[in-house]
Length: 330
Image (cartoon, rainbow, N blue to C red):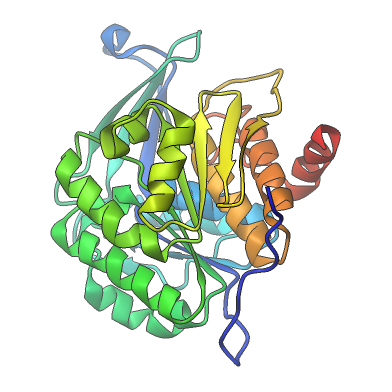
């Protein structure tokens, strides 16, 4: 693997933010039981998550000036949702409001760590994301160091799909870095639609992060991480990171493809959001000038540490902790 240098910068003015994250934020209801055992009186904890918030929190923790570009609802939970994001170090001053409820999901986990999800997204505020929102954020996007977005945001609605593509094109045209996670969700979108979005956005990406076999089988017809990475790169992605189970990641930068071990976390609790933590941390460190090798090492360390917390944002590690674990593994 060759080490990549700092992200290319073509603008003559400083970036307003190191990292922008475009997508969905969700109310998280976490119950320590399986769905089949959920009953009247089952205790639950409310928190806030969604892949965009998870990645933004990780980027901020990794030292990047980070802002969230999202649409939230007008219900009472929007206030604590945004307060939680700000508490995590994320700038929420550019978040838009819509007269719809926030999306939500129920997360159930058993003692072995298996997870089950039930989502409520129909006609959510997040699904109203549109090209008009992207236009309102044009200057931010044009001057950003990096943008993170995902296939989840692109699958929420036709207008969200158009918004994701418009933002990706804008950042790419302005010389910024794009990190994209296909995050295929069959309950949100069909394979053909997800593949079409991937084909259009892959040539714009500096880092495409995907899972195998879940994403890879649905989107590029393989259960082999190396084959998946090659096929993503053939679509135009510059660098590809493929998670291959919980203990390793394949990184293909075009010069070489190599597996990287994920540091072992001796106290795993909940893996929700670990992939988002990897993407947020890695993108942040690239935006701050780290080499690809170092940024990925930090991303893997942060992802491992994150599974000690409950929910998507319950275990975002401080960068000092991430750096210490990454140093042990080098």
